[in-house]
Length: 143
Image 1 (cartoon, rainbow, N blue to C red):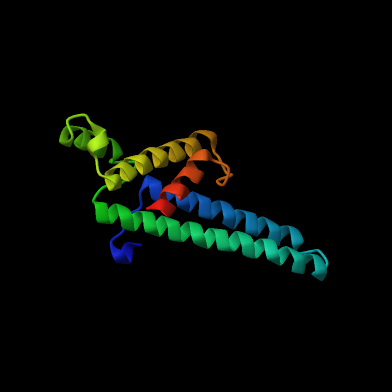
Image 2 (cartoon, one colour):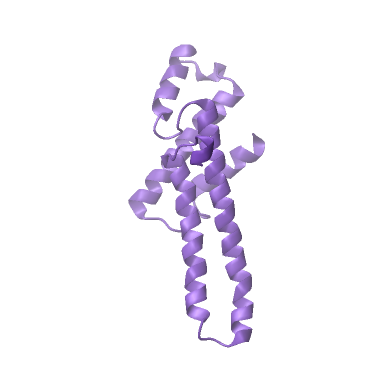
């Protein structure tokens, strides 16, 4: 990330925490199957690969968020309130006038902040069940 001038942010941390979660799951499987029969270890390779693929995907998501934050010139969580305030000033309080892109930025900022707070407050480790996660994925797919 540093070689491209991307900065770590709280939104990036959401995905890096997710990647670490999957890494830990894979490591636990490896540790718990070392003394097992080769057949068991072979069957568990499927889960290790699944978690490793999810880890890699989360890292790429973190990079993509950092890239987006660099392009837009502000960070979703750290600067989100200021961005929303600037939009309210620009559109004189009528946020319905905001472009679709600006509306998606506001939505993502809100969801990333919610995700970050949930993870920090609850020490949440199951990232696929959060309502915010589903919403973020849906926004990115439509974008």
